[in-house]
Structure formats: structure tokens, C-alpha cells
Length: 98
Image (tube, rainbow, N blue to C red; front, side, top):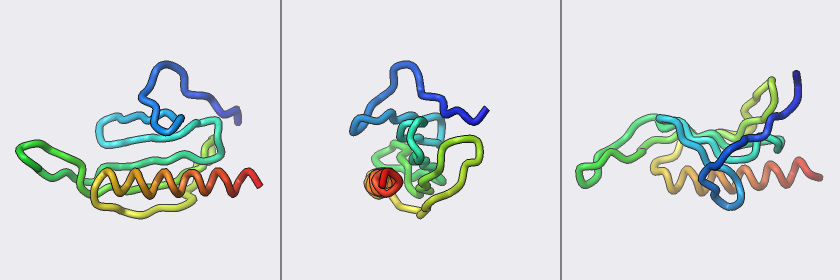
């Protein structure tokens, strides 16, 4: 089956798209779109006694059964990873619409 399945249920929304986290993996975007953002937390660091994400692998991936990497980078800090990831995702979706 090559059909794209939508994400169902209630999820945290960020800029109008679902944002999911399971352990060290964060997924952002609609599975009905051509691309989505995947972020893998490679390691953490301790800040004020709390573990926070440090190195993060940021990837824009294609949806569907034959997933391919469209773009990737490793960033330090969740904020920087999410910033570059959302910019890349919006650009990829915009380019694919033309």
C-alpha cells in the first residue's frame, strides 16, 4: 500500500504541524506532505542539574514507503536544530509545490 497515512489523535502543534517526541526521536510535520522533519538526539548535557539535548541529527525525509534523506546536518542545541529544520522543511515543501 503506497497510501500516505495522516497522523490521528491529539498532539502538540507547532506552527500548524504536529510535533511528536518518543525518547530521543522528534518528528515534526504532516505525513500527508511530501517531506517531514526528523530529529535524533545523539547526546545530552547537564544544565543546572537537568539533562537537556545537546547534539542533534536533523534530517528532512520523504514520506511514503521508500523514505529518502533530502537534507541533513548535525546541530548543537534543540532550539538551533528546530530552527534550521523548520526552515528546511518549509523550503522543501514550497519547492515541491511548484
